[in-house]
Image (tube, rainbow, N blue to C red; front, side):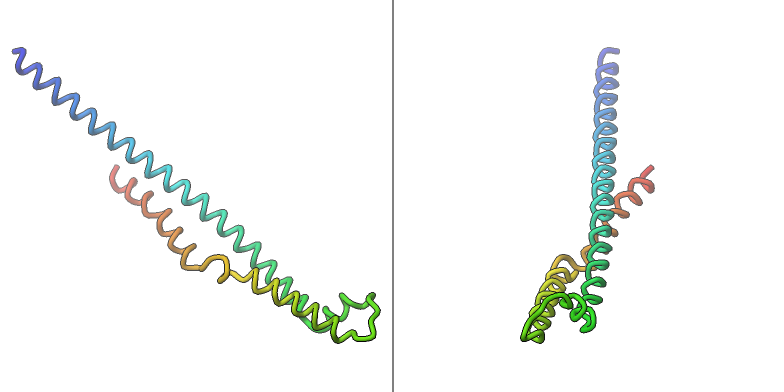
Length: 125
């Protein structure tokens, strides 16, 4: 009788340990998915901000807007001032371009990773 009781207790403890490990793994996968979703939201917000900045720079680079921005500045060589302003805006545009910061494929991969653990945890239930 004691032998069966010992086997039963060992089996029960082993099973509860496996269940606890599975629940912990599932929680860590859910935490990882939540972290990836938060990163994705942050990345998308930064990307939208960059797009707005690039649109503003494109508008500022128009010749009439460069002239307008230098209208109050007097110079004997206004073409040099306009060229310097244009170069400054081009440098800002290159620094703000999405290719210099991150690629769209990185955001897509992040999106795939954030969806995959959720699908696995739902399918496993």
